[in-house]
Image (cartoon, rainbow, N blue to C red; front, side, top):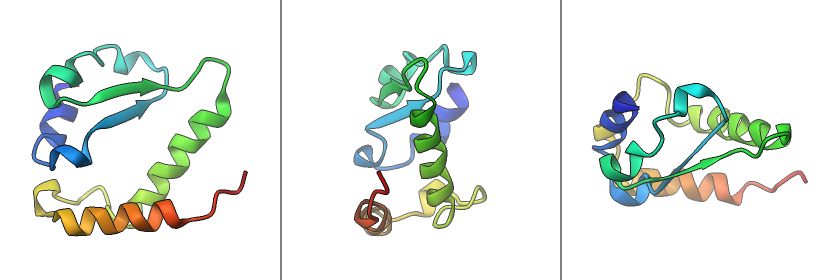
Length: 94
């Protein structure tokens, strides 16, 4: 959790308001997010695999714009907002 906090801390506050996790034990220290970067944590509901798929799909879509090698401090608010607009403008297949 500390590595996650350190990686996200340089981002603008409005870019790290909440994070959704699956129910893995690696996220057991989720309460540290509020103190560390003032972010809320959300978890997929038990027995709701469709929510996990949504999280994974969103991660895949984000990687088009933000590869793992991306340095968070190099991103501008304008660029982050443009990504949000593109993702939010994509029709939902439900």
